[in-house]
Image (cartoon, rainbow, N blue to C red):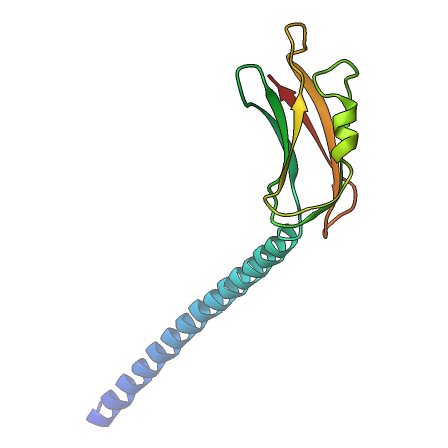
Length: 153
């Protein structure tokens, strides 16, 4: 064998290694592109979900003590959107929430983000310890949202 044969054999080996490395690099690039597409799809789904949640109001209620024997029920919107047509229904007839106080303030045309409404509660020694109320409202994402809250003393 002559020197030119060794040089051409060496060039052939270098070319084969280069082809192998190029294929390996292309495979890793394809995996990275597929992973990037998955991440882009997940980010788009997250953005869509965040946009949908930003159009949802969440109306809830809790009870708190304002004095030695005075109690109030606070109905509030803690969602990121405005609640419309907010109404409150009480399931108990002889509970600590009087229907006249509910009809005086509800239904409300709209409840802004962070807005709350306080209703007097009459707790006496013979009162029940808990009462269930149903809150209904509309928002940009859906009509007739409902939340049943069990108010406890």
